[in-house]
Length: 405
Image (cartoon, rainbow, N blue to C red; front, side, top):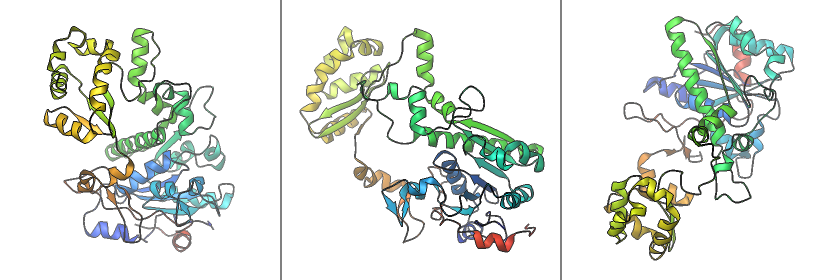
């Protein structure tokens, strides 16, 4: 018998699922997802699917679980806050993928009941266990199977493992991030992992729609490198068009000016005057309407070519006053701007509070960011907390072999 958590399958419904069914069923209610995932990419996709109502069961190593459980400090209830963030609303099933009997039970359930399998293990692991797309889709033609790879399904690096910062480095994202100094800068969140997770969700939903029409499932493939290259899309186009290698732009972006953070007396203000009309409004607010008539700054291409000269006269003006004053003046003038905030300022801001996006499952839970979607003006309710390792073991034992409608 499996040593792990019940596959989220059975007549046993969590309190979360029962309340959703009784109140307002979520879009993916009834969809059974098996996540053979670790770290961030696949678990992030699994969290999104769970937040949309799918019943997601996470396969973990017996006795230890996913490595991300130990990625701390900080910890919450002896488990890393990262694990809590990316694994809410799931069940945990411990399975030894080297144990033929346990794997066979898992295959049997996938054959009978699974709608989706999502995996991002090292190359070759699911194949050796007999849990790969080719074998499982033959057993269950309605199955939607999603592979998350590091470098992709083909090519000389197809068997290499990968993590988010490796892809930020390999795909050139680090080369256009920061101030262009010698020491490289990584984007401060796992943007490649989470972006790949979102592509997984898009692919899975697309294939479920195809199944709805044809009765047939299929295989979705994506990779961290593919996501990283997709995020570098206009940089690649620039390179092909000009032959020039893109470089880091600090807080700005190539081709638009002024479009960057300016230092004020007490912090930074991001200013986005992305066209000639907004530039005219900006310089009026700064007390220098005549700059609009300066040939160096007449059009956006002119301003970008002469950005150093423009910043040389704008910098001391911003520096003379606090960011709140400039934010008020620029906003009144219709110029898009935003303060560079620390995270405590962000979570306490009235706009963030009004969105209701930072939520708790219950009074004992830690506040976390919810799913950034609304359906008919209703946000999906907070997912249950992250699972204890093997929280569905006993339930699986009770339900093993049962045919559940």
